[in-house]
Length: 272
Image (tube, rainbow, N blue to C red):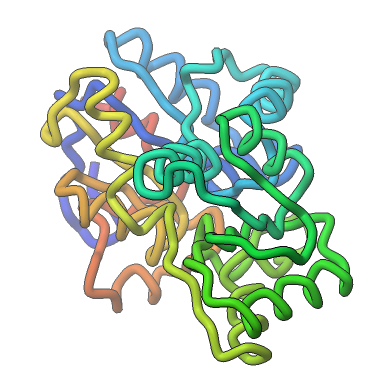
């Protein structure tokens, strides 16, 4: 099979599949045709799949409930999120830090369960952490602006995604929220999730896989594909989410292969 670029697709030998979720295997609550076939094929070939997502608004337990409702076979170890990456980073680089989090209650719970000292009030803090916040209010924005303006904390954000795909189009994601805060405060965060290679490297190490055995699949050039590029692993871009064919063609971090959707990836694995 040839991909959109006209390149022969060879995904043989890939045993660790790192899959984005929204826009790649489903859209909100609608599973894409071919998702279940692809996942079954990966397992039948002796491989494993891990869902890696920049969306910090939900916990692994939330995601597990969601994908199982769609009929996707999964366990907790089959997920790695930017929230989990944030907990690891805060533990390792800022032990004992007081963290103000602008995020969902789910994210705040995950941080506290991970041993992070989190506050939701305006008080002296060491770190501000910004997440994709589906519960965002003007009061939260005011508190964040006050802390960033009057204090000098380390400023982090879970992910740089500008939009999150939904059934009717898109809604602003963490990256867009951070742009809004920069316009108000002049401060801009360092990002934790994709396109940084950290999440990919952690999962590869966890399952003892090499870059040659690993492939990243996603619908965004500047996060999914860039993270795989930065980690030195092959990538597959799909046109079922945010990025267009032009986006994939005109980027310094192009995917190894570009296919229409997960159904085409399944065909690439079976049409050999």
